[in-house]
Image 1 (cartoon, rainbow, N blue to C red):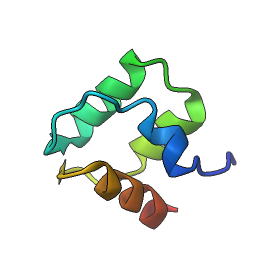
Image 2: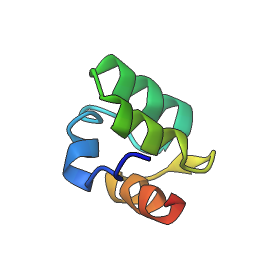
Image 3: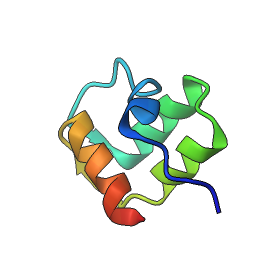
Length: 65
């Protein structure tokens, strides 16, 4: 299984997102920004819902693993 990406790796693919953002918006932005499979897998593992800040996304990734 892949290592969990660190918050900096994840956030570089999420620049320009307006928060709050849904999981689907976050995944779409990451894909559009060319995120690697490791980052996409981590984002796919977060719970559905709205995230109010980049730190909330990072926390959800940590909690999902």
